[in-house]
Amino acid sequence: MTVSEVKPGIYWIGVNDRTTDLFEGLWPITSEGVSYNAYLVKDEKSALIDLAKDFKTTALLDQIAEILDPAALDYIVINHMEPDHTGVIRALRLIAPDATLLCTKRAEEMLASYYGITEGVRVVSEGDTLDLGTHQLKFVMTPMVHWPETMMTYEVSEQVLFSCDAFGGYGALQGAIFDDQYTDLAYYEREALRYYANIVALFSRPVIRAIDKLKDVPVTVIAPSHGLVWRHNPQRIVDLYREWANYALEGPELGVTMLYGTMYGNTEEVAEAVASGVARAAVPVDIFDVRHIHASYILPSLYARSGVLVGAPTYEGELFPPMAHVLDLAARKRIRDRKVGYFGSFGWSGGARKEIADWAEKLHWDMIENWEFPGGPDRAKLTEAEELGYRFAMALKDKSSAR
Ligand code: FEO
Image 1: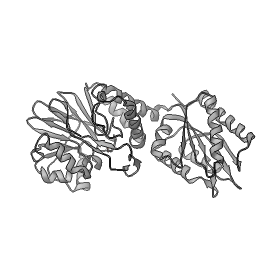
Image 2 (image 1 turned 90 degrees about the vertical axis):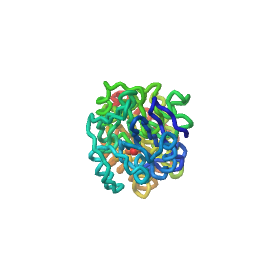
Image 3 (image 1 turned 60 degrees about the vertical axis):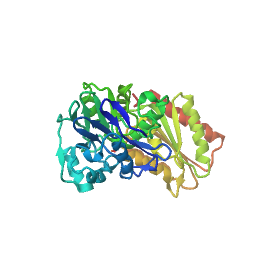
Image 4 (image 1 turned 180 degrees about the vertical axis):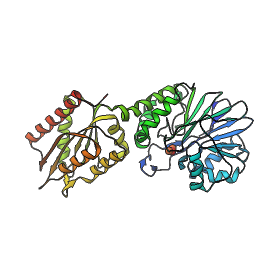
């Protein structure tokens, strides 16, 4: 993509990644892609803000060269050390050995451990500034958004906030970088929520802390390191991030995530009946077949909704393994304080029912339905299933933990 001027003297020089299949080696982006947004401030002195993953080195250097000779760079600001934003640094060091790296104290240690870089590094602290001429950069410490060494950079004259992971999302850019250049913002907002649930949600308290810290700072552009650059309505993405962070701190919204897995279709048939019961209670439900849908796409719903219905058969005396995998990720992401109901088929002795109770305890989920049945469903079981779904949804409405 071509270089874009964000504000006078401030350029987006990022790159799209449509090659990586799994972001962080975990989260699918094969069809969505992702952007690594880097920025260049050109003034009496020049400063590059954030970089890209190492295999994008040539592409990023080409982008820089559209504005200035990369060898002439004065400063490189490292807001965050994760290699999707620093992988290029080793090559850039060879090309611009005199450029000073600016980063936090923790990032200084990581520059040494990741890349063996110990020279030409200047540590910055809260409120420190860097004069480039008519532009001035100010550094804002935002630890744990996303790693402990993370900071944001604020350009004072044009009021641009370079927020790195915060306010970012999946989705390669499609020919334009700004929010006002897209008619389908819903796509990027959906991918931003998936990114939040996959990557950021565990750090929701630091996210709120960072947003509160910046609430009186005038911002004309939110310039994150993934996804859209928000110049038309920068408050929109800040409000969304606050809302999503509050799911973790104040509780999720009323709604059901139904997870099901099935071996021969018996639990699936019952899941359809349970969903009918939820729908009868007029409670929204997202339905995921855990055999086929990657947990990356399930986590946003689990994160945002107050109830979880788990439909899975017993497999070798235990819970159907693909379901256990999703619940394990929910536990690792600390998606807690939900109401949960279980249903599932067994052949001879059962076992999933007991295991789901153990998962509920581990996850701090309140189990209010737990039903396993032998073999396949008949009309009576389907009626019972629909009633289970209805009871569960009504319980969510009656004494919901939802906001
Ligand atoms: Fe986009 Fe935490 O790196």
